[in-house]
Length: 430
Image (cartoon, rainbow, N blue to C red; front, side, top):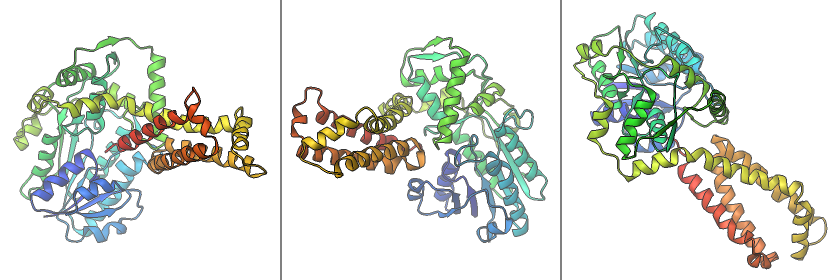
C-alpha cells in the first residue's frame, strides 16, 4: 500500500512508520522537522509540511496514488511553535477535504479518549472538533481514541512517569483522575489492523488499558520496575503545584516540550478512562496491563540514567543559561571596572579596552538567552564552548596569574565547559 502518515516523528507515528516500512509498504512521512528521525528511516519519502496550510489543494501532490491516510499529528497545547487548532481541528479538516477531492477513502485518525464526553481544555476541544470534521465527510474513516500511551521508548508520558519514579519524594496528585494506561504496541497493532482493506470503517473506538490506576499508582509501578523503594508521598501546597504548571507554560513558550503545563493539569483532572471491550471485540487485540508490559522488559542501567536525569534536565539548562546571562550583567554592572583592569593589566590600552568588555558581555548575554530558547539552544551551546576556549586562551596570554588565583577562575572554566557538553548531550527530547 501507499500511505500518507502525519506526525511521523512522534511516539505513535514513528512506531507506525517503522512497522509499515518493515512490512514493505510505501510511506509518505509528513513532519515539520526532526532530522534525526528522518535519518533513521531513509526508506520513507519525507515531506516537510505544516498543518496550518490553509488550502486543501496544497495536499493534492502528496495524495496522488495514496491508498490510506494515517493522522497521528498532535500537540499538547499552544506554544511558540504549536497550535492546537492547527494540529487537531482546522489543519486536519483541510486534509480530510483534500482526501475527498483526491479519491482517498480510508483515513485512520488518532484523537484522545473522552473528548466525545468532556472537553475541559483547548486540547480536548480541538480534538473533538477534528473528530467532528472527519465524521462529516464521506470517507471510510476510523477514529481511535487512546488513553495515555506508554512504551519502552521514553516520550511524553513514558518519560514523565520515569522521571517522577526516580524522585525520592512524590507529591500527592489528589485532583488527578484515573488513568487506563495503554501500551504503544497495542496502539500500533490497532492502526495496522484498520489499514487492511477488509477492516471495518466509520467506527470510533476507545483504546484503553485493562486497569484503572491513580496517577501515583502508575508512578509506583514504574518505581518497582526501576528497582526503587516506594516513594515518600508528600502533601504539596496548591500554590506550589500551580507554580510548577505555570513554569511549564513558560518553558513551552520558550519552545521546550514539557508535559507539566496548565493544560496538562486540566486533562489530568478529567482523567483518561474508557471501555476497551468494543476495541477487543472488533480487533481481537487484548490490551496489556502496565505491570505485565514492564515486567516483560526489565529496566537496565540506561533506563535508570534517563529517569534520574529527567528532572535534572530543566535545572541543567536553567543554570547554564543563567550563568551566561549573569556574567553579562555583572560585566555591564558591578564588574565593569574589574574587567577593564584585567585588560589593562594584560597590556591593552586605548578605546579597545571598553569595547572588548562590551563585546564579551554582549556575547555572553546573547548566548545565555539563546540557550534558554529551544530552537537556538544547540547552536548557542556550541558557541558557548567556543567562547569558553577563547576566554581560556586570552586569559592565559594576557593575565597568566589567574591560573594561580586561589578562587581558580581559570580552573573553574573547565567545569562550565563540561556543563555545556552535558547540555548538548541531552538537548534532544525525541
